Image (cartoon, rainbow, N blue to C red):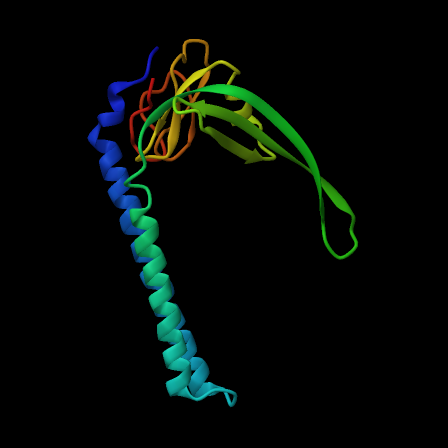
Length: 186
């Protein structure tokens, strides 16, 4: 099963549009909360008066809107490229649980992909080896730039497939993502 032409399905365009809109709407909600919160703080607090608190809230709100706008635009200009899985690594780390309760073991699973121009890219997951096990050294992959996702060239031996839009995990026999409605690239 080579690379799928379903990548050009209009469902992906709709998904990307909805994602951009959601990011911007979320930033507007955060901006409104920052403005209202600082305004309320200025009215009720003895530490800061309202004109100053309201200006700080408006500045933070504007920053949220700017971040939402930039994050919505950030995925649209990535290019598509082909590559090969060249290595896979597992790194064991420890992390403090907190308050002297000890340490917890953590694992970082990394898949290294060398693109056609020689650059090495990483797919990294913490404490979840599903993606790590999905790829094999030598697999040909395509990075779909606008979705910032990877598609394997040969999926013939696979039992699972990831949605290229939302990364939801599916059985290989499914055709459409149950989570976002986009076609599965197989």
